[in-house]
Length: 427
Image (tube, rainbow, N blue to C red; front, side, top):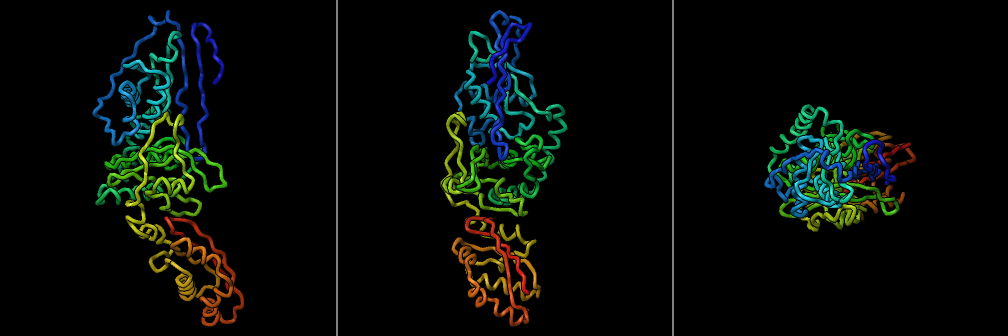
């Protein structure tokens, strides 16, 4: 916080709060307060009163707005007012209920995380209060990004981009199939870009096709809600592994069959390898914790919480088996015939590929199921490789060759499923 400064000629105090956005790598919480002006009481008569009616409470189904559901009656009233003000792009409004600055922060964060369609709002505000009650705002001014300047045009762009996905998803039979389609569509559509414009909004993902985790999360949340599937914005932290430093992050919690599941579109988009993963598709809290995802809590979330995720009925493998993984990798020659479950099936896949292609240099792609199978394949000795398939290849395909070298890489694409790529050379 900068020190208080007296603003010449106006006789009131200006407090400027510029909080740096957290987590520029994966996610950024909004700087909730951007400006605070404290007025002496004597100026009250010259201060204009701005009135905006709160949106109808019936418009907020708590199944789809879980943060709203956790607010007090007073906070809900101001939430609905703030929602209406942002919807109208209003410059400011006078709260219908007396509300503290702390409660206003809670209201703002709740609205920011409940309503992903408000892409022109920065998720922040400025306010004015009197010196005698500095922590009780009498006027609140939402902060907008540049998309608010021609909102009608940008809203049409947003709606068209969303409807491109929704029209196809809604034609599918059930919520699980619709969820899978939207998951895959966003991964195909969006590129993770740290410095992308409006990166904290669903607009950045759906229209610009460049975003960070907040954009993935809000776009998925918005599309699921439009398909009548409850879906929430979950702030937290994440790390690549136990030795990495955690950074601010966000993902979704979705409700299926009256159960809740974590889903992380950002981390399922493995752009460095051009892969679609399902490792973070409909998982429990314990699974996410084992993969270094931690929900934010306490003061970081204004004590707003989301349901626990403890069930496995709708995890990806129980819903669809391995088929989505096979479909996403079909262009790399992956099929049910290239799934290895042990070293014997690994030998068969390698020998079949080399025999069919007759290529001395190549790349073999497969899916390996199971940590034990992957560990066994990675630790194969030269003798095991020779007896497993190389001796036959040397005799029947590359007679006269005397050496074989290879490198093997693996990427998790599901729970216990790995995409394995093996490049090799016979000489």
